[in-house]
Amino acid sequence: MLIAIHFEEEQHCKQLYYQLQSYFTKFSKVGLEAKVALNGGESIQLQYLNEHVNFYDSFHPLITSVLTDYVIGSKEEEWILDIIENIFYFRSQEEKEQILTIALTILEGDREDLPAMFPYFDRFSYIYQTFAQSLEEGTTFYYEPFLTFRLKEYGELLIDCVEMAIDEYMLEQEYQNMIENFRYYLKNTPAKYERIYVLHDRNFTFYDSNFRKITQEEILFYLEVDLIFEHGLNIEEMVISPLVSLVPKEVKLFTEDPDDGVNVSLQAIFQEGLKVLPLQDFFFEKTND
Image 1 (cartoon, rainbow, N blue to C red):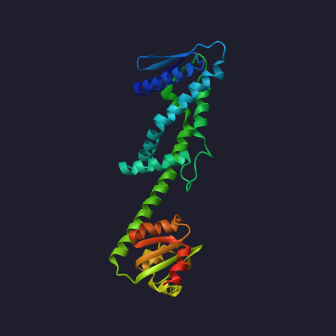
Image 2 (cartoon, rainbow, N blue to C red; image 1 turned 90 degrees about the horizontal axis):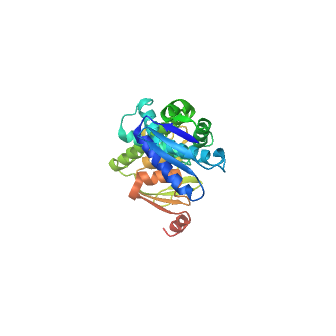
Image 3 (cartoon, rainbow, N blue to C red; image 1 turned 180 degrees about the vertical axis):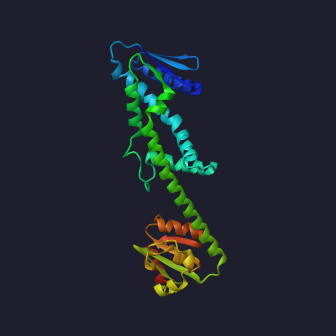
Protein backbone atom coordinates (compact mmCIF):
# COMPACT_ATOMS: atom_id res chain seq x y z
CA MET A 1 0.00 0.00 0.00
CA LEU A 2 1.48 3.30 -1.14
CA ILE A 3 0.59 6.96 -0.57
CA ALA A 4 2.29 9.70 -2.60
CA ILE A 5 2.29 13.31 -1.37
CA HIS A 6 3.31 15.92 -3.95
CA PHE A 7 4.66 19.39 -3.13
CA GLU A 8 5.27 22.60 -5.00
CA GLU A 9 7.77 23.84 -2.40
CA GLU A 10 10.88 21.72 -1.88
CA GLN A 11 11.37 23.14 1.62
CA HIS A 12 8.05 21.74 2.86
CA CYS A 13 8.65 18.44 1.11
CA LYS A 14 11.97 17.89 2.86
CA GLN A 15 10.82 19.19 6.26
CA LEU A 16 7.84 16.85 6.31
CA TYR A 17 9.96 13.96 5.07
CA TYR A 18 12.39 14.33 7.99
CA GLN A 19 9.51 14.57 10.47
CA LEU A 20 7.89 11.42 9.10
CA GLN A 21 11.21 9.61 9.09
CA SER A 22 11.69 10.52 12.75
CA TYR A 23 8.19 9.28 13.69
CA PHE A 24 8.58 6.04 11.72
CA THR A 25 11.89 5.31 13.45
CA LYS A 26 10.35 6.02 16.85
CA PHE A 27 7.23 3.91 16.33
CA SER A 28 9.01 1.04 14.62
CA LYS A 29 10.08 0.04 18.15
CA VAL A 30 6.44 -0.65 19.02
CA GLY A 31 5.61 -2.54 15.84
CA LEU A 32 4.96 0.06 13.14
CA GLU A 33 5.92 -1.43 9.79
CA ALA A 34 6.22 1.46 7.37
CA LYS A 35 8.70 3.20 5.10
CA VAL A 36 9.06 6.76 3.86
CA ALA A 37 11.07 7.79 0.80
CA LEU A 38 11.96 11.17 -0.64
CA ASN A 39 11.55 11.44 -4.40
CA GLY A 40 13.75 14.41 -5.33
CA GLY A 41 12.38 17.53 -3.70
CA GLU A 42 8.88 17.17 -5.08
CA SER A 43 7.22 14.19 -3.44
CA ILE A 44 7.19 11.82 -0.50
CA GLN A 45 6.22 8.18 -0.82
CA LEU A 46 4.73 6.41 2.19
CA GLN A 47 4.48 2.63 2.32
CA TYR A 48 2.54 0.69 4.96
CA LEU A 49 3.76 -2.90 5.31
CA ASN A 50 1.86 -4.35 8.26
CA GLU A 51 -0.65 -6.90 6.97
CA HIS A 52 -2.02 -7.74 10.41
CA VAL A 53 -3.14 -4.26 11.57
CA ASN A 54 -5.71 -2.34 9.58
CA PHE A 55 -4.41 0.77 7.77
CA TYR A 56 -7.21 2.94 9.21
CA ASP A 57 -6.56 1.76 12.76
CA SER A 58 -2.87 2.64 12.92
CA PHE A 59 -1.07 4.20 9.97
CA HIS A 60 -3.84 6.52 8.81
CA PRO A 61 -4.28 8.30 12.21
CA LEU A 62 -0.50 8.70 12.53
CA ILE A 63 -0.02 10.28 9.10
CA THR A 64 -3.08 12.49 9.57
CA SER A 65 -1.82 13.75 12.96
CA VAL A 66 1.67 14.47 11.63
CA LEU A 67 0.28 16.42 8.68
CA THR A 68 -2.10 18.38 10.95
CA ASP A 69 0.71 19.33 13.33
CA TYR A 70 2.90 20.26 10.39
CA VAL A 71 0.32 22.61 8.87
CA ILE A 72 -0.25 24.39 12.17
CA GLY A 73 3.45 24.53 12.98
CA SER A 74 4.70 25.64 9.57
CA LYS A 75 1.84 27.69 8.13
CA GLU A 76 -0.22 29.26 10.91
CA GLU A 77 2.10 32.17 11.73
CA GLU A 78 2.74 32.82 8.03
CA TRP A 79 -0.99 32.97 7.27
CA ILE A 80 -1.72 35.18 10.28
CA LEU A 81 0.99 37.64 9.23
CA ASP A 82 -0.38 37.63 5.68
CA ILE A 83 -3.86 38.45 7.01
CA ILE A 84 -2.47 41.24 9.23
CA GLU A 85 -0.66 42.83 6.29
CA ASN A 86 -2.91 42.19 3.28
CA ILE A 87 -6.40 42.25 4.79
CA PHE A 88 -5.90 44.74 7.64
CA TYR A 89 -3.01 46.69 6.03
CA PHE A 90 -0.55 46.82 8.91
CA ARG A 91 2.95 47.46 7.55
CA SER A 92 5.09 48.11 10.63
CA GLN A 93 7.10 45.00 11.52
CA GLU A 94 6.80 45.76 15.24
CA GLU A 95 3.01 46.12 15.02
CA LYS A 96 2.66 42.93 12.99
CA GLU A 97 4.71 40.95 15.49
CA GLN A 98 2.73 42.26 18.45
CA ILE A 99 -0.60 41.46 16.79
CA LEU A 100 0.72 38.02 15.83
CA THR A 101 1.67 37.32 19.44
CA ILE A 102 -1.81 38.30 20.67
CA ALA A 103 -3.49 36.22 17.94
CA LEU A 104 -1.50 33.11 18.89
CA THR A 105 -2.40 33.48 22.57
CA ILE A 106 -6.07 33.79 21.59
CA LEU A 107 -5.87 30.64 19.46
CA GLU A 108 -4.29 28.71 22.32
CA GLY A 109 -6.69 30.11 24.92
CA ASP A 110 -3.81 31.56 26.94
CA ARG A 111 -5.41 34.97 27.53
CA GLU A 112 -7.84 34.76 30.43
CA ASP A 113 -9.11 38.26 29.66
CA LEU A 114 -9.98 37.34 26.07
CA PRO A 115 -12.35 34.71 24.67
CA ALA A 116 -10.50 31.68 23.29
CA MET A 117 -11.30 30.48 19.78
CA PHE A 118 -11.08 26.82 20.84
CA PRO A 119 -14.64 26.46 22.23
CA TYR A 120 -16.06 27.65 18.89
CA PHE A 121 -13.61 26.04 16.46
CA ASP A 122 -11.12 23.29 17.26
CA ARG A 123 -8.61 23.93 14.48
CA PHE A 124 -6.65 20.73 15.14
CA SER A 125 -9.81 18.60 14.90
CA TYR A 126 -10.99 20.44 11.77
CA ILE A 127 -7.66 20.07 9.92
CA TYR A 128 -7.30 16.46 11.09
CA GLN A 129 -10.75 15.50 9.81
CA THR A 130 -10.16 17.26 6.50
CA PHE A 131 -6.88 15.42 5.98
CA ALA A 132 -8.49 12.15 7.08
CA GLN A 133 -11.15 12.45 4.38
CA SER A 134 -8.51 13.01 1.69
CA LEU A 135 -5.87 10.44 2.62
CA GLU A 136 -7.00 7.05 1.38
CA GLU A 137 -5.11 3.85 0.66
CA GLY A 138 -3.17 4.16 -2.58
CA THR A 139 -4.00 7.87 -2.97
CA THR A 140 -1.93 10.56 -4.66
CA PHE A 141 -2.20 13.70 -2.55
CA TYR A 142 -1.35 17.27 -3.62
CA TYR A 143 -0.33 19.30 -0.58
CA GLU A 144 -0.57 22.98 -1.66
CA PRO A 145 -3.95 22.71 -3.46
CA PHE A 146 -5.29 20.97 -0.35
CA LEU A 147 -4.24 23.94 1.80
CA THR A 148 -5.78 26.40 -0.65
CA PHE A 149 -9.13 24.76 -1.31
CA ARG A 150 -9.90 22.50 1.65
CA LEU A 151 -9.04 24.65 4.66
CA LYS A 152 -11.31 27.64 4.03
CA GLU A 153 -13.01 27.48 7.43
CA TYR A 154 -9.61 27.48 9.08
CA GLY A 155 -8.69 30.59 7.11
CA GLU A 156 -11.92 32.29 8.21
CA LEU A 157 -11.10 31.40 11.82
CA LEU A 158 -7.69 33.03 11.48
CA ILE A 159 -9.25 36.21 10.06
CA ASP A 160 -11.67 36.39 13.02
CA CYS A 161 -8.78 35.77 15.39
CA VAL A 162 -6.64 38.51 13.84
CA GLU A 163 -9.54 40.96 14.02
CA MET A 164 -9.90 40.21 17.74
CA ALA A 165 -6.12 40.52 18.20
CA ILE A 166 -6.08 43.91 16.46
CA ASP A 167 -8.87 45.19 18.71
CA GLU A 168 -6.89 44.07 21.75
CA TYR A 169 -3.68 45.58 20.35
CA MET A 170 -5.38 48.94 19.82
CA LEU A 171 -6.77 48.86 23.36
CA GLU A 172 -3.31 48.08 24.73
CA GLN A 173 -1.81 50.94 22.72
CA GLU A 174 -4.50 53.28 24.04
CA TYR A 175 -3.78 52.06 27.57
CA GLN A 176 -0.02 52.63 27.21
CA ASN A 177 -0.63 56.13 25.84
CA MET A 178 -2.87 56.84 28.84
CA ILE A 179 -0.15 55.68 31.23
CA GLU A 180 2.45 57.88 29.52
CA ASN A 181 0.14 60.90 29.53
CA PHE A 182 -0.53 60.50 33.25
CA ARG A 183 3.19 60.15 34.00
CA TYR A 184 3.92 63.29 31.99
CA TYR A 185 1.19 65.21 33.83
CA LEU A 186 2.51 64.18 37.25
CA LYS A 187 6.07 65.06 36.30
CA ASN A 188 5.20 68.50 34.99
CA THR A 189 2.49 69.64 37.43
CA PRO A 190 3.18 71.06 40.91
CA ALA A 191 2.09 68.71 43.68
CA LYS A 192 -1.21 69.50 45.40
CA TYR A 193 -0.80 66.95 48.20
CA GLU A 194 2.34 65.77 49.97
CA ARG A 195 0.93 62.31 50.50
CA ILE A 196 -2.32 60.52 49.80
CA TYR A 197 -3.36 57.29 51.44
CA VAL A 198 -5.54 55.08 49.21
CA LEU A 199 -7.64 52.51 51.02
CA HIS A 200 -8.82 49.72 48.74
CA ASP A 201 -11.47 47.75 50.60
CA ARG A 202 -14.02 46.83 47.91
CA ASN A 203 -14.18 50.53 47.04
CA PHE A 204 -11.34 53.07 46.87
CA THR A 205 -11.17 55.87 49.44
CA PHE A 206 -8.61 58.71 49.51
CA TYR A 207 -7.13 60.25 52.67
CA ASP A 208 -4.70 63.13 52.99
CA SER A 209 -1.43 63.01 54.98
CA ASN A 210 -3.42 63.64 58.21
CA PHE A 211 -5.75 60.72 57.48
CA ARG A 212 -8.60 63.07 56.75
CA LYS A 213 -10.94 61.63 54.18
CA ILE A 214 -10.82 63.63 50.95
CA THR A 215 -14.39 64.54 50.07
CA GLN A 216 -16.11 64.11 46.72
CA GLU A 217 -16.39 67.90 46.55
CA GLU A 218 -12.59 68.25 46.81
CA ILE A 219 -12.04 65.53 44.24
CA LEU A 220 -14.49 67.18 41.86
CA PHE A 221 -12.82 70.58 42.42
CA TYR A 222 -9.38 69.28 41.46
CA LEU A 223 -10.49 66.84 38.77
CA GLU A 224 -8.89 67.67 35.41
CA VAL A 225 -11.49 67.04 32.73
CA ASP A 226 -8.81 66.35 30.11
CA LEU A 227 -7.47 63.48 32.22
CA ILE A 228 -10.75 61.61 32.49
CA PHE A 229 -10.73 58.33 30.60
CA GLU A 230 -13.23 56.36 32.72
CA HIS A 231 -16.10 57.54 30.55
CA GLY A 232 -19.49 56.27 31.61
CA LEU A 233 -18.57 56.07 35.30
CA ASN A 234 -19.88 58.37 37.99
CA ILE A 235 -17.28 60.53 39.73
CA GLU A 236 -17.51 58.43 42.92
CA GLU A 237 -16.65 55.31 40.89
CA MET A 238 -13.53 56.80 39.29
CA VAL A 239 -10.14 56.14 40.85
CA ILE A 240 -7.22 56.76 38.49
CA SER A 241 -8.17 60.12 36.94
CA PRO A 242 -9.12 61.71 40.27
CA LEU A 243 -5.97 60.47 42.01
CA VAL A 244 -3.71 61.76 39.24
CA SER A 245 -5.60 65.08 39.28
CA LEU A 246 -4.75 65.46 42.98
CA VAL A 247 -1.04 65.27 42.02
CA PRO A 248 0.32 63.71 45.22
CA LYS A 249 4.07 63.57 45.80
CA GLU A 250 3.63 60.16 47.37
CA VAL A 251 0.91 57.53 47.40
CA LYS A 252 0.48 54.73 49.90
CA LEU A 253 -1.92 52.08 48.65
CA PHE A 254 -3.43 49.69 51.20
CA THR A 255 -5.00 46.64 49.59
CA GLU A 256 -5.49 42.90 49.82
CA ASP A 257 -5.36 42.65 46.03
CA PRO A 258 -2.28 44.36 44.50
CA ASP A 259 -2.98 42.55 41.21
CA ASP A 260 -6.36 44.21 40.81
CA GLY A 261 -6.47 45.98 37.43
CA VAL A 262 -6.82 49.46 38.92
CA ASN A 263 -3.97 48.84 41.37
CA VAL A 264 -1.69 47.59 38.60
CA SER A 265 -2.45 50.74 36.60
CA LEU A 266 -1.70 52.95 39.62
CA GLN A 267 1.64 51.20 40.06
CA ALA A 268 2.45 51.75 36.39
CA ILE A 269 1.55 55.45 36.60
CA PHE A 270 3.12 56.44 39.92
CA GLN A 271 6.03 53.97 39.77
CA GLU A 272 8.46 54.63 42.64
CA GLY A 273 6.07 57.28 43.98
CA LEU A 274 3.62 54.59 45.05
CA LYS A 275 4.06 52.09 47.87
CA VAL A 276 1.78 49.07 48.14
CA LEU A 277 1.00 47.83 51.66
CA PRO A 278 -1.29 45.19 53.20
CA LEU A 279 -4.80 46.41 53.93
CA GLN A 280 -4.51 45.88 57.69
CA ASP A 281 -1.47 48.20 57.83
CA PHE A 282 -3.75 51.15 57.12
CA PHE A 283 -5.40 50.96 60.53
CA PHE A 284 -2.04 50.46 62.27
CA GLU A 285 -0.51 53.43 60.46
CA LYS A 286 -3.55 55.61 61.10
CA THR A 287 -3.45 54.81 64.83
CA ASN A 288 0.25 55.51 65.11
CA ASP A 289 0.35 58.60 62.94
